[in-house]
Length: 309
Length: 329
Image (tube, rainbow over all chains, first blue to last red; front, side, top):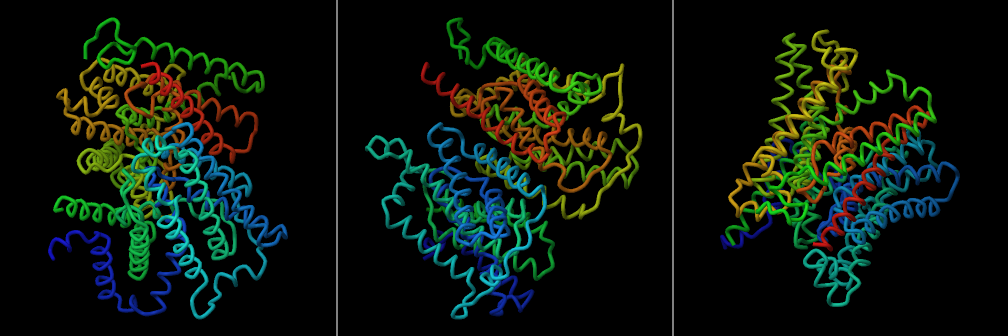
């Protein structure tokens, strides 16, 4: 039994401790409206943490996803403000995100450039394009119905949580019930072996990054609706939370080891932490610091567990 | 690790001047060519004032990028240098205003930078967290702390004697340029003429082989990250002296240019190849491009985009060269 406890992922310990701590300090933490709030706050993060999980499973990383998300939001908002229909705006955002994903993927998988510097470079490019498009201003004046879509509650469940749940299910099917998903793990485990067995691993590898763009476009839809505007730099830094969530969930940065459920737990742990710190009036600038500390603590717990087994 | 004459150019212990110097000469030629082109397009470019301005900007960039160069030579990465500069500048500004002592403030910046670097080193060498993850986390930790204690405000107005470090002249040449040359000389001596420097190249070329041949890899790595942090702290001093103001958010935009300077300078992201002289030419080239864009009145919003493209181009060249040399070996 003790052995099984040691094998439990560190993120569960951490989540349990956080829930107890915040529930004691601020009883309102456990109220239903607040729990729904946590879900709302976590929805967008979950949607961009999922492709980050797949990319990290393939031994890569995407530092640009926050900047690309901001850019997609700007593109989406500009098309809507220009009078374009929602599906056209979404297609424009989708093309932007998938374009950046395929660009990153091609440089990483075909040329063999290190993922963290490639995506650092495309972070600069995406941020630059967003600044050029908007001249540094916020895009406002979106049609009225758009914000209503974010706050709608069919069957009492807020739309963002519904969409996030749907996206998670789709990602689960892709990762665990398709050939593509199997290859994601295999590319991280041993790409050479996969290529030698005749699989066009490079193209699947690029596909991981391009698919990631699709998730980012969905996230940009929710982000723009939530803020009812397009802001050129608003989501820069959100990739830090996404990477932290993946690390919290116990996905390794090497050898294609990890799981999608861990990322969901990691996203919830970060949502709980930020919400609890909000209730305790801790300024958001210090919340990023505590997310970093949380990741290190969890990694240390997981390492101890690994040593025991 | 024999230094036999027939050994290929990338032996660790051999003198590192040969091909490196040649590459640096190419880059200097590129600097001259770019300057020539820019002087055709803009008459302001070749003015004494603008040349000094470029050199002064390049010297600050070089200081940040020099510590980063050492880290990249070990096949690691320090993404926290920009945010580290921001935090060190903020802390130093607070101390300088509270005590009125420029010396104490400068000491604080150096210490703050070195402690951040030390923490990076411990995470990378002891806890074995991949360097880009550890230092990327540190980026946001530094950034968060800076925003917390600086709020939205700025701290400005430092003693004139201190400001001379950033804005003063000696024989009509700005003082930061002397600082750059001094650090370039000292850094080159350390990397190419000491065992510490050779160890750095050896770790970058093959960390396992380095450990097996008796190099204290962990200790060296911690030292390299601490130096990188201390250089960011030192750059913070020069920044404060030049701009005369500290506020949150000043450091983060400096990360991409610093990485660009190192990569343009020919230091390989795969470790073990490159040096500080290349980084100096890289800083010069990047500053020239950005300065040229300014003079040609291209919207400043294009600068992050241009820097991103330059990083990717430099990395593309690095990767392709690396592949070719591997294929030949």
